Structure formats: C-alpha cells, structure tokens
Image (cartoon, rainbow, N blue to C red; front, side, top):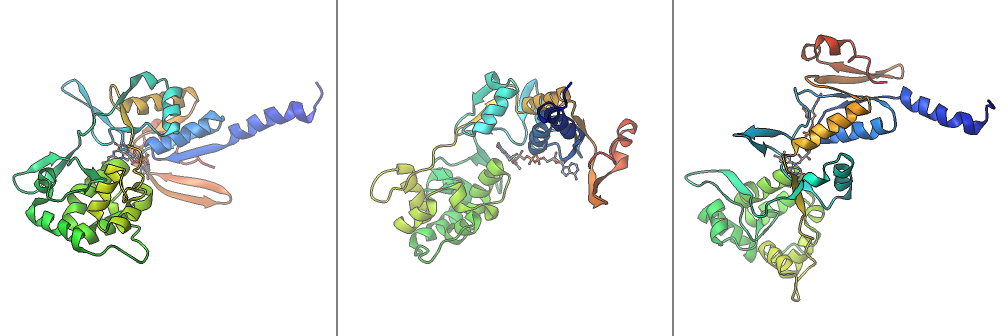
Length: 301
Ligand SMILES: Cc1cc2nc3c(=O)[nH]c(=O)nc-3n(C[C@H](O)[C@H](O)[C@H](O)COP(=O)(O)OP(=O)(O)OC[C@H]3O[C@@H](n4cnc5c(N)ncnc54)[C@H](O)[C@@H]3O)c2cc1C
C-alpha cells in the first residue's frame, strides 16, 4: 500500500478526533446538544450531570397518567436548528402546536392567587393598564402607576436597553414583577432586567419614541398599521411534543449512547483546573457510583 498523503490523511484525522476527549459539564439541553456535536465527529465524550437525571429545565412528570412538562414546556419551532434536531432524533411526528393563550400568572397576592396572562400584551407589557384582565393581575394601584406611562415624556436622548428597567421606569414594579417577569422567565429563563429590549421586542423602543408611551407602542405594534405603526415581530411559533419534552432528552441520551458517549448523572463538578496542559475536573466523589468513580477525574484533556 502506497503511503500517500491522501491515503493517510483521512485515517489520521479520524484517529486524531477519536483521541480528543471532551467533558461536558451539565446535562441540560445545551450540554446534551454540545455533547452530540462532539460525539457526531467521533470525539470521546462524557457528560457530567449533578442531578440524578438528564434534562435540566426540561423535565416531564406523569400526573395521573398524563405527561406534564413541569418547567420548560414549549419549543421554538421557527428555529431551524431545533426543527433539524427533532428530525434527526426521529421526533418530527411527535411535534404539536402549543396551545395558544394558555399561560397563567401564578403566585399573585391576596385572593386572586392565579390569573390568565392578559390578552393584549407584548412580553407581558399591557396595551391598556385598565383592561379587566390586566387589573386583575396588577390591581388598581398597579393600574394607576402603569397609567403614568401615558403622561410621561418619552425618552428623547438614547434609549433604555434593559427591558426590566424600561418597563419599571414607565409602568412601575407591578407590571414588571407580575406580568413581564413571568413571561421572560418562562420564555428565556432570564429576568427582564437582563433582557435587551431590541433583541426581545424589535421595534418597541422606536414605537415608544414615536407614539410617546409604552402602552401606546404595544398597541401600535399589535395594530401593525397607521402612521405610528412599526413592523410587529412575527408571532412566535411554539410547539410541544406529544408525550412531553422529556422525549427530546430521552432521544438525545439514546443518540449519545449510540455514538459511544457517556452520560454520568449525580456527578457534581466542583472545580475545573488546567495543569501541565491537561484539564482536570473535580467531581463530587460522594455523588458518583463506584463504577463511575474511576472514570471521572481523568475524563477531560
Ligand atoms: C421556569 C422556566 C421555564 C422555561 N420555559 C421555557 C420554554 O417553555 N421554552 C423554551 O424554549 N425555554 C424555556 N426556558 C428556558 C430554557 O429552559 C432554558 O433556556 C434551557 O432549558 C436551558 O438549558 P441549559 O442546558 O442551558 O440549562 P439547564 O436546563 O438549567 O441545565 C443545566 C444543567 O447543568 C447541571 N449543572 C449545573 N452545574 C453543574 C455542575 N457543576 N456539575 C454538573 N452539572 C451541573 C444542572 O443540574 C442542569 O441539569 C425556561 C426556563 C425557565 C427557568
């Protein structure tokens, strides 16, 4: 056999990739997908997950024989990467449109307790603070405070980038805490203060400057016409999986196993250090089973 570069380069490359050892800390959806990316090209992958199950914020439990997603419950179906992943894992047929207008706000003080998320809102920001479904959540004093938004001059120099600070400044704490925060935590897992207005609600700041109030900007975006209208963001297309999003975690775990990747649960990584060019993970040894214990410390390099 002639040792040509062409004949040797491909096996060399494969062997090189196989020698790469990858440790993924955290077996939530991000960690599992990262592990899949590496396992696909042949690297030796180990996922370390602190909890006794994979999935992180994706968890499906059976309630009276009904699968219920207890944290994250919808998938962004406009995201081509998500759609491709579902197809690769053979889950396309299990996709269903998420029920519209089914979100509720829980933990409200007093006798209200919980209420449906008001209808005319953008990221929880109400178009009309006096609407019955809004007042039910923020109360009379919250509605009065939110109304101040209509009286205040719009920002004329620059604009507030933080969604939470913008809404708090114009409409008060109750709108942020009871309407906007439940939506942003639910959609992005992030507090409104840490969300960029332009990224989450394109055009909202511009509409505020044009129409003079935040609630007016929400109305203008919803209307999508007239002199003050701004292009409304495409309505989010969200779906779920028949049987729960846990199916996605199960399918990823199975695919990783097929690719010879290892997922270790109850493995809390407490430190990541690099010495002499070698990465070392400290994994809470008490959390590992005897079989895992020997593998864990030397996993990454
Ligand atoms: C209440 C809520 C509802 C949400 N709903 C939706 C939704 O409906 N749709 C949507 O698209 N997004 C939703 N999100 C956002 C979405 O859940 C997250 O963006 C996504 O699931 C996060 O995945 P992740 O892998 O980054 O993190 P996580 O799911 O949090 O996973 C991180 C994992 O890492 C593990 N871990 C952490 N530290 C260590 C360590 N030192 N050693 C070992 N393991 C460790 C954790 O135990 C955990 O399992 C929601 C978020 C929240 C908080």
